[in-house]
Amino acid sequence: MDVLHSTRTVVKNALDKLGYPDEVFELMKDPIRMMTVRIPVRMDDGSIKIFTGYRGQHNDAVGPTKGGVRFHPNVTEKEVKALSIWMSLKAGIVDLPYGGGKGGIICDPREMSFRELEGLSRGYVRAISQIVGPNKDIPAPDVFTNSQIMAWMMDEYSRIDEFNNPGFITGKPIVLGGSHGRESATAKGVTICINEAAKKKGIDVKGARIVVQGFGNAGSFLAKFLHDAGAKVVGISDAYGALHDPDGLDIDYLLDRRDSFGTVTNLFNETISNEELLELDCDILVPAAVENQITEQNADNIKATIVVEAANGPTTLGATKMLSDRGVLLVPDVLASSGGVTVSYFEWVQNNQGYYWTAEEIDEKLHENLIKAFNNIYDTAETRRVDMRLAAYMVGVRKMAEAARFRGWV
Image 1 (cartoon, rainbow, N blue to C red):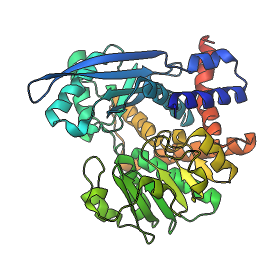
Image 2: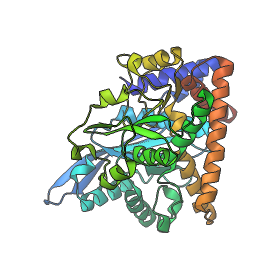
Image 3: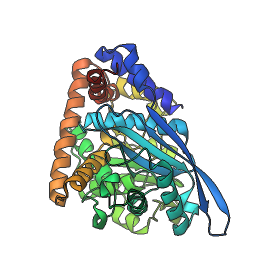
C-alpha cells in the first residue's frame, strides 16, 4: 500500500468536507521542504560506509516543524513525506504551535555498534544543521532511536551552534533537559484514548481482553499500563512472532526478558503468527507495530469492538471503511499516538523557559490535552456523520489551513 497516496486521499477528503479550495490541498499534499543527505561513517572494521538520510518539513504556517528521526532499513523518501504530514495533523489535533516534520536514515541499528551509531547520529545532525533548530525544526526519537541518540544529536548541534541548546531536540535524557514522562508519553496517550473509547462503548477496561501488536517502546509501555489497570493482555507480538494466553499474559515477566529492540517471542516455543494475533477474540485491539497490518483481506476477521492505532498507518483506508461499517470504533493513529508530540512540546517549552515541571504536572497536562482532543474528534465524527479517521484529519488540518490562509499563502 502507498502510504503517501492514502494520506493525501484523506487530507483531500477532509479539506473538501471543510470547504477549502483545491490550492490548499496543492500546498499540503507534499512537504514544503525535503532534504536528502549522504552521511559517511567510519565503521569498526576501518571501512567508510555511506548512509542516506532524509528530513522533511511539511508546513510551517503555524510554527516550527516538529517530528522524530527513525533509524530503519526500510526508510524511504515517500514514507518520510507521509509521516511529516501526519505530524502536522497530530499537532493540529492537540492544538500545538507546530507544523509537522520527520526524518529518517536507511540503516539497521541492530547490526551497528554503539560507536558506529554515535558517528551516524552526529553525521546526520551536521548534514541537516542548516535547516533545523529550536525555532525552525525540532527533531525527536522515533523507530529504533532513543534518548541516547537524542543526546548525541543535541551535543553535536550545540558544538555547531557554539552554545548549549537543549531546545533543539526533544526526547533527551532528564539530565540534559529532557522531560519527565517523555519516554512513555506515546503509550500513555494511547492508554488515555483506550479509556475514552471504552467509555463510549460501555466497556470496563478492568477485565477487558486486549491484544497489543508490537512490543517495542510504545507497545511494551502500553501493555504494562493496561496490565496494571487490571486489563487482561491476552496477546502481544514482536517482529518474530506472537504470544497468546486467553487468561492474560504475565506482562512483568515478559518485560524483564525483552531486549532493547522489543524482542521476546524468540525465547518461547509455542508462538502464533502476527496474522493470527490480529484475529484473536478480544475487546480491544491495539496495532502498535508497523503500517498496513489490517487490510481488506483480514478486516472481516477482526473480532475486536475497539481498534486503537498506536502505530503509524496500521489500517488501510478500505479496511477502515469495512470496520466502521460494522460498528467497530476505530481510533486513528494521528489521535491515538499524539501523546509523544504533546510531551515533546512540554519538553520544548520547559527548555525555552528554563523551568521544569514534575512528573505529576506532565501527566495532568497530557490527560487534559488528550481527553479534549478525543472528545473533539468523536463529536466531529458524530456531527458530520464521518468515521473517526476523517474526523481527525478534519480537526488536524483546519488550524494549518487557517494559518496558511491568514499568511496569504493561499
